[in-house]
Length: 463
Image 1: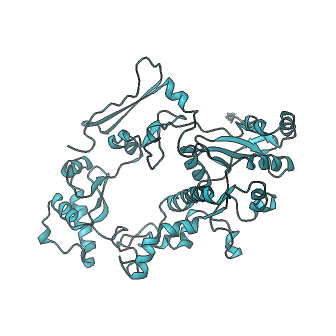
Image 2 (image 1 turned 90 degrees about the vertical axis):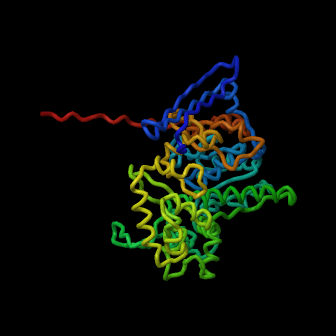
Image 3 (image 1 turned 135 degrees about the vertical axis):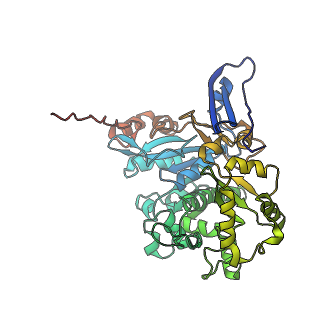
C-alpha cells in the first residue's frame, strides 16, 4: 500500500469533559484514493494546562532581548521545554514595539522598556537580579554602551548566564565583529556555503552551473545560531550546578555553521567524498550522484533517493526496474551524470503515489518529497505529535519540540504568543513598587500599549 493510502482519526477527548475546540483538517494528497483525516479535540483540562509550567527547564528564568531569527529561536527552545521566558520589547514614544514577526514567541511573556533611559535600565537590572539567563542579539559593544554589558549585569547576579547571539562573534578582527550580515554571509565565511552547490551541467538563471546556494536561512540563523545558542546556555546551566557561577555564552553563527560542518571539513582535508576544488558540487551528498538525489515524477512531484549502502542501492535499482549487473559500478563517478539522466527518465513515467506503491515495504531509502501541508498531516508525524494546531490559526499546524522527552512530550500543548508589551505591568509590579511602575508608564519608559495601525482609505477617482 502507498504511504498515504489510509484513513485514520485521532481523538483526545475524555468522558465527561467539555470539548472547547474541535477542528478537523481534511487533506487529500491524491484526490481519489489517498485521503487522510486529522481530528484534533482539545478539552477543558488541556486548555487550562497551557498556562502551566512543565518540562525539564521549568525552574529556569530567561530574559530575551527582542531580535530576529536566531535569538528568538533560542528563547523559544528554552520556553518549549519549560523555561519562563520574558521577551524585552522596546518602548518607543509611549508605545510597545516588537522587533519583527512573533513566529518564535510562543509561551513567552513580553514587556516593553526603553533601555536607553535610566529608568528602563534599572528595571532590567532588577529583573536580571532574579533571572538565570539573559539572551542579547545585538552587535558587539551595544550592550556595553547602554551600561548593560556582562561586566555590569554579572556583578549584580554572579549566577547569571549571559548569552550573546551574533553573526561574527565577540572579539576576533574588529572590522568583522561590528559588520552587518545575514545567514548567507555567515555561511560564506564559515566555508559551508562553498560546499552547497551542484555541478551537474544544468545552468541556473545566471548561466552558472555551480553557483553556491543557501538552504533558506536554516543552517546559519536557526541551526548554527539559535540552536547552538540554546545548547551553550544549557551547558552553562549544567556547569553552574558545580561551579556556582554563571558565564558568557559567545554564540556566533559563523562558528556554529562551521561546527555543524565538522565532518565535511575533515572530508575536505582528507580528500574524501570529492570535496576538493576539482570536484566540488559533484560529490555523493550534494546531488552529484544518482543514488543520492531527488527526481521529478509524472504528476510534477518529487521523490528523494538516498540509497548509499550497497544493500539499499541494490533494492533501489531493482525497484526502478533495472538490473544491477548490467549497470556501471555505483561509485564510478564518470557514469554518475548518465545514471542520473537514466533514473530521471524512469521516475517521470509514474506518479509519486505510484512510486510509493512500488517501494512500499522496500528498504531502498526512497521517500516522497512532501510539501508543507502534506508533512503536517503525514500519519506517522500525527501519531508522534510532531505537529499540533496553531493557537493563532487552528486551521494551520506548527511543529512541537524535539527531541521528544518521555516525561513531558505527551503533555506538551502549544502556548500563545504575546503581543509586544502585553505583560509589562504584570511583570514589573512583581519586582518594583506600583507607584514606580506607574511613573515609568507615564513617562513612556515602559508600555503595554500598541500603536493603532492606520486603516487604508481607498481613494475613489473622480471621473
